[in-house]
Length: 197
Image (cartoon, rainbow, N blue to C red; front, side, top):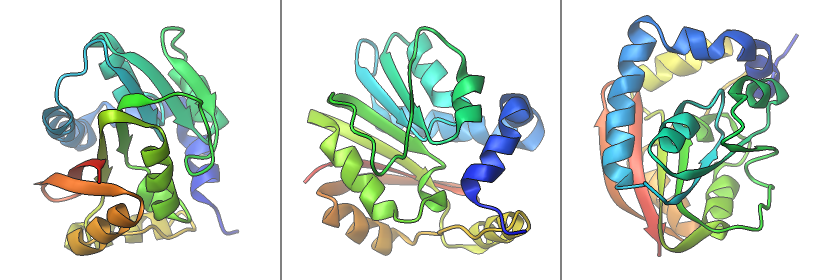
């Protein structure tokens, strides 16, 4: 039976935070988080949106740092796993949801590879961005590690998007966003900072 990313992540929700907090995954996540926070800049007292929050790794980090955080995910299981009354929680599609708010910082880590139309998600980021705000996106690069990651998810019944830097830059520009910085957290993650163009 063919799966979908939503079905897969919903089925993983109960143990997701624990699994991602151990071993090589935890090591990679710590390295990624250091670069996400470097590119994002200070966030204390900022209005932060975690778009595609999963079990809330970044939402919790920014909440603990003093930000006012809203978290969005399409998986009911992931939203339930977040379970933090200090974080606004919204169940919805990252390309479609309208929150009626503007955010100083939008973080989207590990989402774009799973959605049908990554450009529409970036356009929705732009629609939610406050004046002077920034968007930080983490995604798999189109390299040998990204291709292994895609093969891993094909084993779950679906494929994912990989992104070269030139392609990503053009997609962001079409959404009204300009890439101002990028860092590879070798081997699996490209992290970029976007601002309104």
